[in-house]
Length: 383
Image 1 (cartoon, helix red, strand yellow):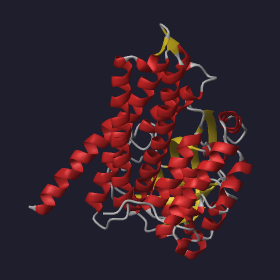
Image 2: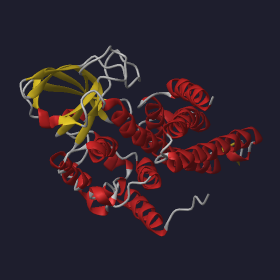
Image 3: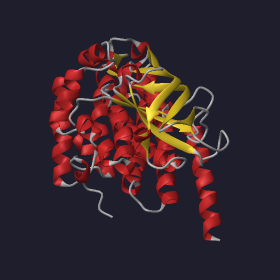
Image 4: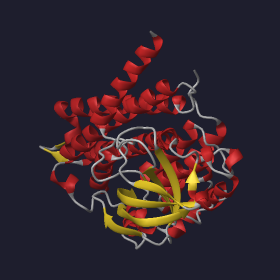
């Protein structure tokens, strides 16, 4: 199989990397992260003008790409700059709308792709861990519409989103896949409140409270009770995006560490000349290449019709990225010494982001268990 990027993807990658390197330095990133919205609306629109948001969606949905490698190219470039603009949730919410939205619902894709709207996925709950099927938020029929009540946790970009994609249980037990429905809820809906807070990596999230929030029937995305498969589809694209973002961050942490080993002198010689440090760095470089292979495999598998093969590749990549990302963060800081933890050095922020990525959409332990469970399902289906 040929894994070389097409000319269009190479041009997109080069353009985004150049833009991030020239326009999005670490000071700009900190300023955007500390802004009222947790990102810069101006930069959000500029990324849209560059086609970075459109590249995440297929042409039939108003985008420019939408394949696994398009998503990987965009997020790898974003990872190099620790970009805080809300790409991840735009991808996941937009993918769900593109997959199952009515013509009226799909109109919101135009605002997302143009950088005029911010969307947030609200599926995690305080006691649910990482399981998409553990939903205690409830939705009940209310005349011609629905009434939602419950709490959502760690909603990225949730403090200032315009549109939320909310998972709620309309039937079944609290951990069953059947009975989960998805609703598009406007931020202005009465009874909806968001409490924003800062994350350790510089991003922002929010706790979402739905207190008898009434939405019309038109807010239901897809079929009632059949939202789990759609949620899995959307978060699968998010998993690939996070893995690619981590890869970009790893490359920058690697480059910074190599430069430090070349320039930091001790006992009259660069510390990079010490054999013990060379061995540690060589091991780290091999691990990063292993992570790159996992991302390539996940990108190639993203649109496979075989659900088990697709989801196994995504969980394998997320497990690999979680393990190696943590290793890169630890080794890079240790090779720098105490200076590696200072706020002024960009490396510390790459390390924090790598650790945070491990915990988004399931950490390495969760995805190792999921990979094993999916493998057993494949064995049973084959026998």
